[in-house]
Length: 260
Image 1 (spheres, rainbow, N blue to C red):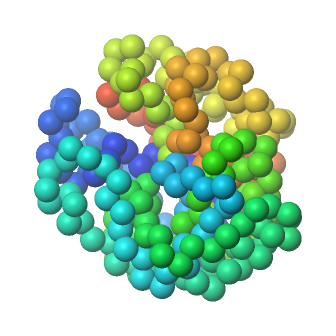
Image 2 (cartoon, rainbow, N blue to C red; image 1 turned 180 degrees about the vertical axis):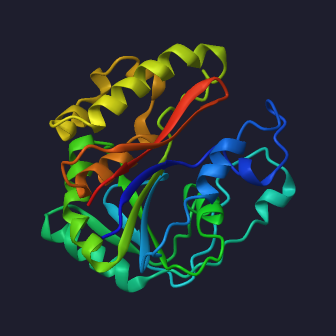
């Protein structure tokens, strides 16, 4: 079975431009981590949950060749011409919708939406050949952690069907506090998150993540953390592994692997 990962997707198209909002090598370590991710055997398909799509029901892309959504602003013109031509998978979308509906979760299929940068930016590094079919799953706009843990549990059978579940967000996401002020709160929250993901009561702790040390300093709004809840819900109770960690723009940022 494929492992389940929570990965950082960086800042906009940061990996595909000269970075001028800080040291030129700001994103180099994260880019290297994502490039090295291309694990074997390749999954049959990828279901990716991004922090950049919220709907009133869990929504799945069914477009066979999804367009890209350049949902960032103020970046160089060439970053709005990036391409990632991997196929969609209407069959996987339908299967995932079936599983969610069986768990009485609000679900819809979206035939027109493309992939936002939480999908195509990291995947251009992770799977540059763009040959693996991909379906994007939205967040529910309640951002209720328990609801997203339930969604992950509903989707667990996909892991036996050759599908890799990837949660794309950031373990620290406070755009107003990147820099020196991010150091202490990002470290405190990262320590808590690492402990929670290795605890026997992991899902209970994740449900109450907002009570963690520096939680709201790390995530004033939690859309970049909630994809992790889907990943955790799909995983077995074994402790997660921290597979990447670095200081980025003054903040501790980490990635985690959970086990099927």
